[in-house]
Image (cartoon, rainbow, N blue to C red; front, side, top):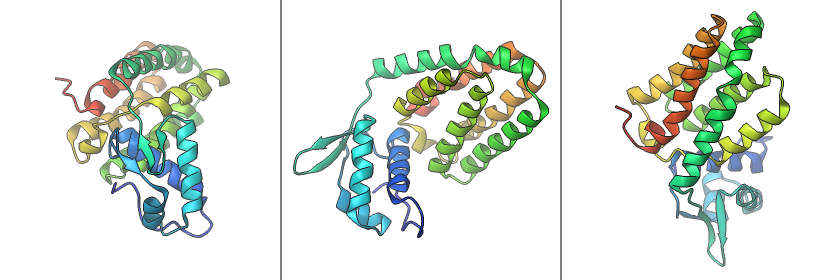
Length: 222
């Protein structure tokens, strides 16, 4: 079973939320590839908890499109077609990259410091080969960055698109130079924004999102 399903959860943790986040991370990264059948009892054993919160988490993942119910068997990881993934990436590039120009004009020192801390969390997670933490930190960084633009609907749209994204080669990138470089790009993006180079930040972010179709999909970008 996936290395993302990491041991017993601590007392007081949101059991459903912990399971949902871990399984979603495993699916997004390709650790649980399309077609994989998972069951609530099996995952519950891995977490050391009852099957009820696991089943609730899987039903939530079904609503999000990550899994389908297989009658009398469990839940099967859904596929995202090449066309779907291409459309998601292009939409993200159109929505996320252009705001970098305006953000660069108005970015304040305290926001720079916050973004740097978030970028370092991504770098640290990559170095520790902790992909659930990497994905969570990456999501938090990019959504926080867009929040600085001030358009809450934009943030919500991008969050939804990011949750639909699959990076089926990401699990195989553990320990690679590509993963380290991808993580470091967040610091480079903050550098450009702090320097008021909005166009440079837009270009970098466009390329960064494009990794979904390249490195993070198991393909070379050479």
